[in-house]
Image 1: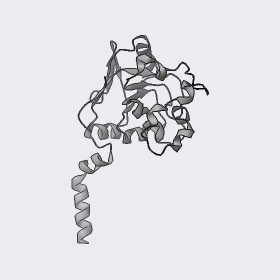
Image 2: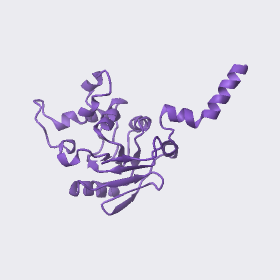
Image 3: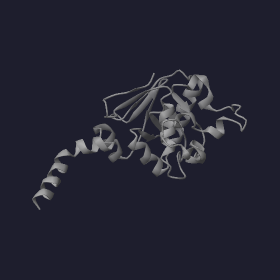
Image 4: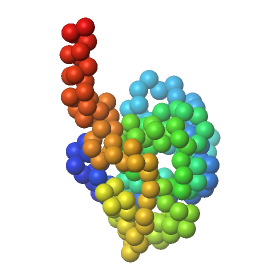
Amino acid sequence: MSRITQSSRIIQVTGRAVPVPGDDIDTDRILPARYMKELTFANLGQYPFQDERFHSDGAPKRHPFNEAHYQGASMLFGNANFGCGSSREQAPQALTRWGIRAIVAESFGEIFSGNCLTLGVPVVTASQADMAALQNIARKNPGADFNLDLASMTINGGGLLVKISMPASRRKAMMEGAWDSTGLLLANADKVAGMLAARAAA
């Protein structure tokens, strides 16, 4: 079972991880373009990696998101340039609605990373060697729990402790609960009130 602590403040994410190896996994692979026609985000959790998970006749392919022991995983372990390509916000929506609450990879597409921030999903980086080690643990022991801690900037699980990185401004937004519009308003309430007062007095 996954757990996100501290209400809207994202300090830790704990749970199992699904490894999705490969560099340059773009948003079209994460969510094929035809699902952009969905009127709401509600059903997008059915479709992550759809074309890599199923043949045209609906028969399943081998893919981590189809494997029973990864169902309920709350972290995704990727590689270099994960989420590159188009800016479609539906791609991280699909992952979060499948159950992903944090993504660890060597690097990310910048727009994808920003879209994840607005959903309260930490996207953090680790070295190529550390990602290989994390993916190896998740493959060999799918039941292993990992703990991602933004306070210490580490992830640990399966006997491994790894240093992680993310931009300081995004880490601060997560830890202060300012990653969504409500959080931003609350965090800047005094500034907003001052601006409104100045505008009323003008």
